[in-house]
Image (tube, rainbow, N blue to C red; front, side, top):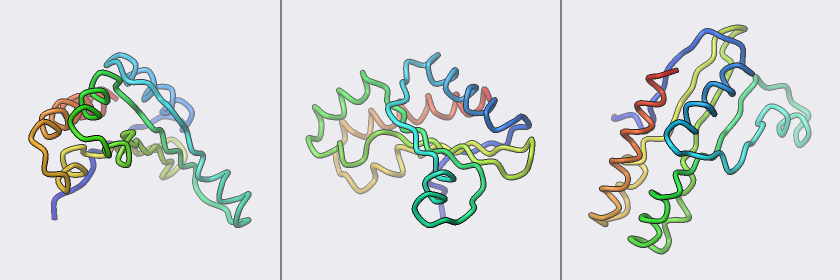
Length: 129
């Protein structure tokens, strides 16, 4: 089975990893629209302990605009989620959705071109970490 994400392990603190990801995203014109602190949310809602795990909702406005023009319901699949999770102290995994994999269900050639462009950027961002 093909992976639906790109990932990389890096050696740094969890907070450093978050900052590195945000910095690299900004270098490619992405913004972080939302952040979900899964560890904190699970503690508050279920009173369970969970590892440091953050979901960043990243958006590249020019690509999002093209996607909205190509497919008016595409907002159900946006933004691009990036996961930052601490596997062990000083060992952090970064994973980003593969937009091509997530858009396969939508049969729209114009959307495929946008997904390819965003996928290339996300691969490059993950590679730079």
